[in-house]
Amino acid sequence: MAKVAFLGLGVMGYPMAGHLVAAGHEVVVYNRTQSKASSWAEEHGGRHEATPRAAAEGAEFVMTCVGNDDDLRSVCLGDDGAFAGMGPDALLVDHTTVSARVTRELSEEIGGRFVDAPISGGQAGAENGKLSIMCGGPEDAFARAEPVMDVYAKICRRIGDTGAGQMTKMCNQIAIAGLVQGLSEALNFAETAGLDGRAVVEVISQGAAGSWQMENRYETMLDDEFDHGFAVDWMRKDLGICLDTADEIGASLPVTALVDQFYKDVQKIGGGRWDTSALIKRLRALG
Image 1 (cartoon, rainbow, N blue to C red):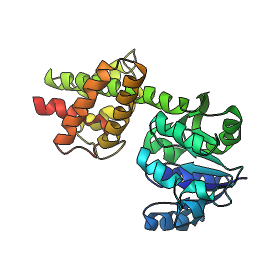
Image 2: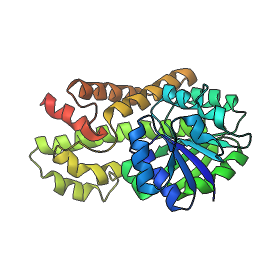
Image 3: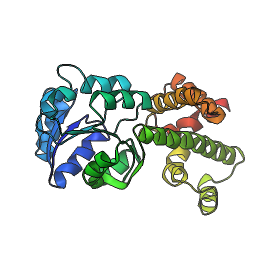
Image 4: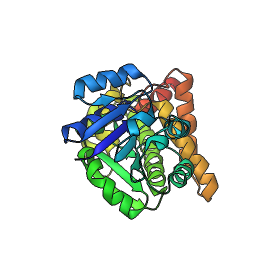
């Protein structure tokens, strides 16, 4: 079993770190809000430290799951950052959704001992240990980290070199944006036409229209419930990364750019913390 430091105990990181303990790993955690780290340690029996550096000392693997590029830099760099505490053979595995740029920057800083491993599957996937993990980095680094990540993975695959995991996560978010908008339009159309939305989904979900979003979100969308899931604010952060990267590499994302603006509209009506399926709220507001 491995010695692991886990930095970031949000809705994803909290259960992920718990799975590591349940699998027999020795886990030390750090969280910016220390009370949450203390609560996690009491619940799971692990240890918590006051700085990323202290948590990383003696760890074979340092896992990060924070908010954005700046958050990742802050837990990795500086006198109290994880890099200052990591030993020469320790490996950093980053589960944050960030830009490929910061991934490459930090990988160079630590001499390539870095696996970018963004995740998909939502809070339920983290709690159930059924996440999709898309990875980039050196083959030997991935081979070392894969058995540790497997404890909370449904699938864990190396896509390519450093940054490939983050680029794959961008593909994931691009696909989701279009799917959720399409589902929102279909359900809103059904409502406007006076159809039974549940009956409609029961039929169309069994054909080519079926998707994870339809299966897991249609009922709450029809019930106008959005206090759950992946927040609109975070989706806009991710889509911003996608759009910036598209400009860098010369890719066209017309639908993604449009849906990003629709999410901006949702934010304007107070839905920044609503689930991404709240796109239907915008359509309802338009009448």
